[in-house]
Image (cartoon, rainbow over all chains, first blue to last red; front, side, top):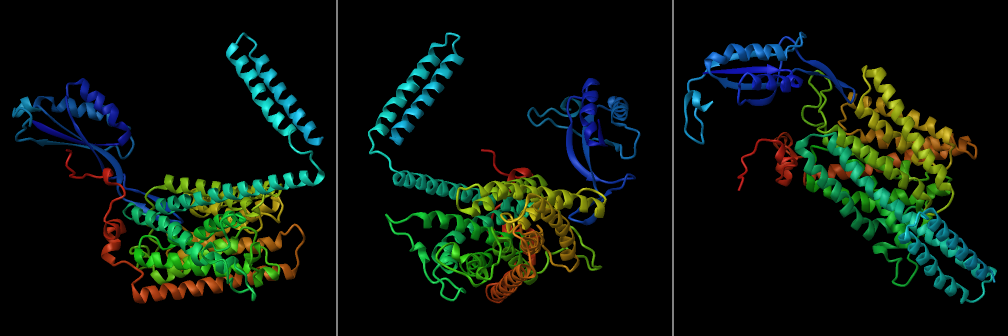
Length: 112
Length: 474
């Protein structure tokens, strides 16, 4: 089992979700996050005073899948989240030791 | 005879309406026909009743016409009072929008109490000081506790009081915005009562006392302040200045290097809603100040609107030039600045002048906000610039653009009024806030300020469902 964490441009979420559904990903968790990478932040003005916005809003999706599915998930995310412009985000793949479905007590691949 | 003729005419007219209704639905709609006939029959007994009255004389007609005018005056004054009351909601929304979510409950409470405590204070003391009999022209001495009203007596004092109390509350609530996010609630309540009971009405009596039983020294000199650029807005604005100075800036507003660090308001649409509500309320504030249903209200209405529009546009343009982007906060302040500025001259200048007055107000408010930030007077909503500075500008403009002509004397009296207002309000408010600071404390502790006034002062949370919480589901 692997966990795939991807940081996306918020408006790409729907497209990525549909693409992952199509290749058999049955669940995911998303959160609204803020951060910066090479894109950095930008400047805004409030009542005449300029300020730097360092953290740009992004969406983080987390999906846990069987190890065999990882490369398809990663390429689906790349295909559907990319705009070619700076700030498209990142994908991280992490190992998962165990998964348990709370309702039934199932574990491992059965639980995801 | 006249009356007979009138009622016959009326009956005929109604009949025609009835027939019209019937004809327009002549496609066989029996239901509409029935209604049309019913309408005619309903009119018959009324015209019969009129026909039975004593014959009218020119005198009885005059009395009847005057009565209609009196009733119209009551209705207009009270509708306008309701519109001005609604401005309280506008002030509350502007202030909440321009400040942080953690202080929203505190801001609602301050605005709520400004009107509630202010109403009682103005009933007990303020109205008497402002509009009571005044031999010297400095202070009213009668009419406390609404004693001018006796059951069965002339109720005009009630309508007039209602219109005046919403004005007093406006002056009081202006201060709330400039002192937002750091003022101790209990100290604010004391201020709120005293401004409605003493500071506002005493100055108000100097300029407006003769509208009722009083007579102020300033109005006797010819001071023009139709709806209160100075009497209401500058009083609020200069008291706000005193409050902001005594309190000091919010934690984190000014960096050690002297840089202004903006503290973002938490809800700009709410601030914008507040400004739209205030703009609407001003259609009661200015045209209602006639306290009479007459034709003057049309020009006052138009002037009010044009000045607000011009102020809004020029503030946008000024912010665009100065900051590179058209800024919402400043544009909202610009609309209010235009409204404040036209409040004094709204009945005595042409619509074209109103545009010029509003436009200058729009530029002035942006520069003023930047100025007060530069000298480190922290005013989260721009109340000092909107109400104090532009109240003064509007009052001066009433002299400059006066349709009846202007002169050095007229302008001199306006300047005297502006100066008197500043000296009276700023120093009484400053002393009051200093006393409050020394006795019960004017400012919350730094811990309370950082945590938020909602939790520490009121034990509440304005937006509990917008964050992760561990509330039990059942």
